[in-house]
Length: 274
Image 1: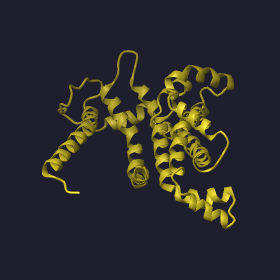
Image 2 (image 1 turned 90 degrees about the vertical axis):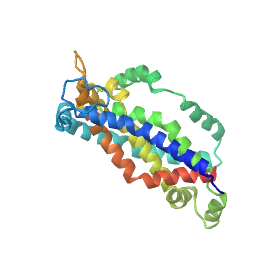
Image 3 (image 1 turned 120 degrees about the vertical axis):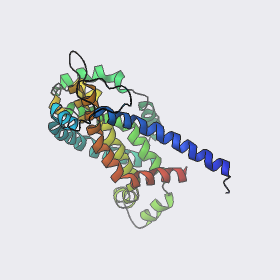
Image 4 (image 1 turned 45 degrees about the horizontal axis):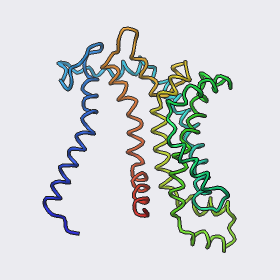
């Protein structure tokens, strides 16, 4: 397909605009983080002196060392279990002839419309009755359930496009359903599983509402819960808040950069298969 010069330049201009819209908030955040602590920086204006130690002050003020440990515990509790359940459910709904699978699929679709904010009060009382308030389990268990509709939909969309001939060939070789799942389909599903793991990692890492409402101890929250340390009774320390936000964002950016090939591969796989 031939691309005209007009289409080429229109595409480049749109790409530059999208890049600017994406990058400008991060530049603003970084410049604000370099202003003197306790001040109210005006927009994108550079400070007279760069306060690089704001990042160390933010790390100490929010006790991010303890929060890093807590966040990794929550990640290890959420991501592997959610991936395992979603892969099993997606395989059953997308590739096997299980009873009522269309009804179950509709229930998962309806679950996508459930907002976190709408169930936070019932969740609070439920966790209180279970005696789990102020523990990491109060975040882990609800997150596994809340991620299930999207995670199952993601994996079902992958398995429903897997060729039936592959399964029929494995069946003729004597493979059971369990062997068909673990030895044939799971190895072929690594891009979809890896991309889902990245998304669940990012959403768990950035979880703020559940961490604030269900856990009182700041050291048992997620990294996003550290942002509350910069808001006092009489105001908010904007430069330290921005420095803390950048520190919280750094691990998620590293994870995305390391696994970006798997993420792009899964998206392209879905695009090709339609």
